[in-house]
Image (cartoon, rainbow, N blue to C red):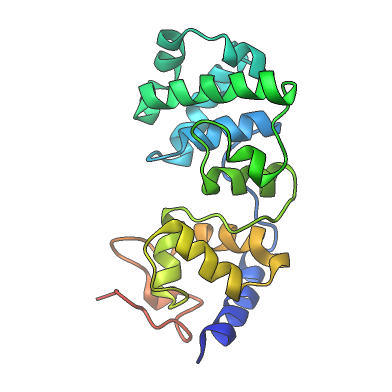
Length: 211
């Protein structure tokens, strides 16, 4: 089975399994999603969701975050890890949002990538889940792992994996495809011990790298 045919079947199978995929990061607007995604680096979504309610009550707008004192911001997000770097990126990011975008999170990939602390993964999350814009495919740790195991790419770098997925997956599925792989990776295709015996993709999966 070639990559294109396997991709079509993955879309059919996981689309049926997860008919209404949504972002696991709790948010009510693009700014909250942007900040939550920055916090999610090297951290679980569950932990981020525990931290953000208090954070957004204290700093509800880009303007408020832009003026935040770093020690207070660091303390609020400490449990997410790498909190000093994340706090600086969040504040600097919000300062640019205020000064260059009128306090509104931009809705283009080019503008999002200008923001401190924002790479393609974060930009794609915000565009896809806050604005419904499919500019690419989100590549997080689950998407990276499953894309390799399923034989959709041999790349390790997120940007190269994204290019391979964008070539194989029709644009109309770019947003949900990442969610499907993320959900499936959390529930079934786990990093250390995948549950291959109960996996809906078992018959089409080459199980690359799985012992």
